[in-house]
Amino acid sequence: MARKNQSFNKKTNFYSPPPPRAGGAGQIPKPPSNLPPYLIVPALTLTGGIIYGYYHFQDEVPYTKRKRLLLTSPQHELTMGHNQYKQLTQFHKKDILPSHHRASVTVHRVGSRLASSTKTFMKQYHSSSSADADFYNKPFTYTIIQSDQVNAFVLPGNHIFVYTGLFQYIQNEDELAAVLGHEMAHVLARHGGERLSGNVHMTLFGRLLWWIDPSLLLYSIFVPAVKVLRELPHSREHEVEADHIGLVLASEACFDPRAAKRVFGAMKEGKKIPQDGNKANTTSQQQQQQQQ
Image (cartoon, rainbow, N blue to C red):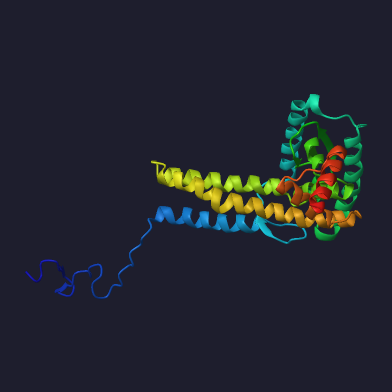
């Protein structure tokens, strides 16, 4: 029975011992592998791609030096902004004020001074590449829309829209410069491209959750969590950043940066500028209150 697994050697007339078993004496056992071999290469490739993408697409905001991931190219943002500009001008075609209108003249005059300060700002706080040069050197356009809506916004490509309802809170050019400088700052910081990049991240992650959990339970938790933990804080961060850069632009263009606090505070509290007739009524009411 002891020689059952042994082989007989005719030259030596002896039985040779059987080969050692796996894990037996004379053989080092192989460590168990948690991942199948066909998954190791894709996992390493994905990890390397994530690390490369993180450093390749990392960008820095001018002036504030905040680091962020920016997946969009300047040319893509220009194309997107130009298409939206054509759509909006066509939609508001009947409500756009002519260039000789008093509001249009004022916005163009203030905006031109601020536009000159943006060039100085970018030279000082941003090292533009050849790809960025076309993005930042686009001339600003100003579209004034007759509407009671209190709003102003900017599109990539330096397209600024101003609704006339905004003038209910603006009483001089310094305050108008604060609003326009704030909008120009969004373009200089490329906040539009950053929002698009964030949407790409969240879309990919959401699809991954859908693949992991087809019941969509994780996805239903993910959507509101993204809004609360990412979108709202980032939106507020962009606004604060635009405030800071806008003050720099206003100062560079020789406007009073202190006007920003009053006009943004008035819009937040809903305090409109009283008209001439209302001013007299307000003054008489204050005098009556003082006499009483």
